[in-house]
Amino acid sequence: DTHATEVPTHPRLVGELSGALNAFMRDLEEHNAAEEIAILVFTEFGRRVRDNGSGTDHGSGGGAFIIGQRVAGGLYAEYPSLEPAEQLYGEDLKHTFDFRGVYATLLEQWLGLDATPLVGGTYEQLRPFRN
Image 1 (cartoon, rainbow, N blue to C red):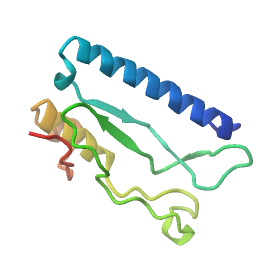
Image 2 (image 1 turned 30 degrees about the vertical axis):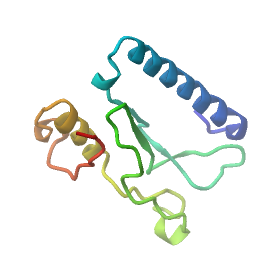
Image 3 (image 1 turned 135 degrees about the vertical axis):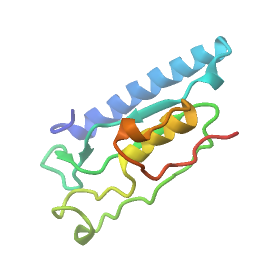
């Protein structure tokens, strides 16, 4: 968590995550299984825009990554505004896509399940997968 010393800590943590994901994908490729996997990297909370002195506190908006050989790549939602008037409470990013839509995307398009009972409703989905 990066409530403090975020500047040196965050790049190290992202580097560790990147290295682990890269090693996992290389292993899948070596076993001819890479096309069978979609990875969702998602945080359970976002970060506030405003610095607290040496880090950032929990906020409302966050990011997610869908990774895999069959993922088309790209940005799939509008980037939230950094303007204070557009933020929640003047310092929280306002999400532009409901996280349940991300879950529904993977549940329906990747796993072939009906997402409605699992996410508690019907939500807009992304189109991240190549055919």
